Image (cartoon, rainbow, N blue to C red; front, side, top):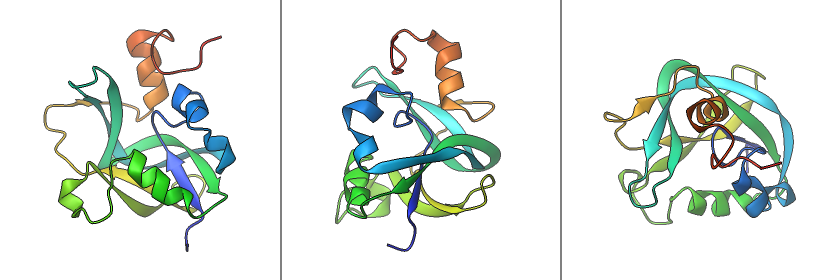
Length: 147
């Protein structure tokens, strides 16, 4: 594994329930908040009734959290969580994982980039998923830890 860092900018950040439920602290070490180029969108999943973030290449700035990967095998599990299946062509997956150079800190890290159209999706001005969810619905039911 040539890149030992990964960025999460949505529901897998430390403040979110999924971070705890998936026990990500067993596989990752939090390094710092980070920023990188891209545009962030709010995707509504009509099947589950939940929303999730999608980052695409763009001129904006996205805020995320940078982690050091303890075990290289974690990337396979993360790919499966993000809907990237072995043998799929890139067009068959909602996301693709690429190494990006972060703006702050200046380091290379794996980032999941949305692979589908965002034509009918809400662009998140400011590129901060957690701030967007808090503004949109407060802390209740927003996927953040309660209490």
